[in-house]
Image (cartoon, rainbow, N blue to C red; front, side, top):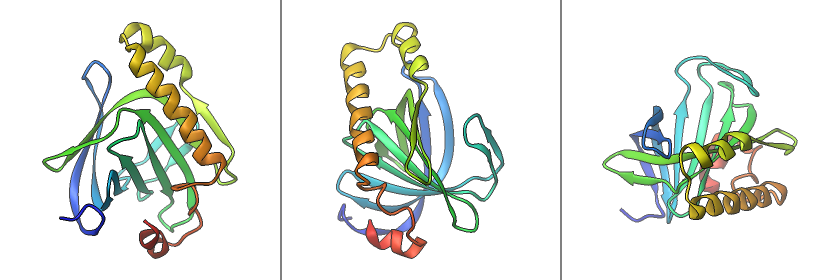
Length: 177
């Protein structure tokens, strides 16, 4: 398979771990495209989730998930079941690893919530700082997390990919990847 081609969707399992190796979350998503180090998945919330900042995320909410094999963050583009853009949710973590139909990464706590108007909130910095001590994040991990956060904020503020296509229809979004 060429790494820059659109793929027939295949089902993957996404596993998020904490720094100590414990499993944090798990779900299934469809592999939509891989272009170089970028992997794009599509997932559908199977059940309702109550989120502290985002409120109720209803079942049927669609998540286009952007992971990189060489970047310390990932980005989720959330739309309701009718296709209306809801928000972006970004995670700082280790680069994704894809092997044997499983995509994994380590969550490093820091998240960024991006609203429709591109205002954003950096959240869970306190959790990151606490886990520097309790989980023993190395200096290298701390530095990469802070660098990734700065890079992500630049992408948001400058409306660079994947923050440049929030109003695209599903077909336009797939073509733009």
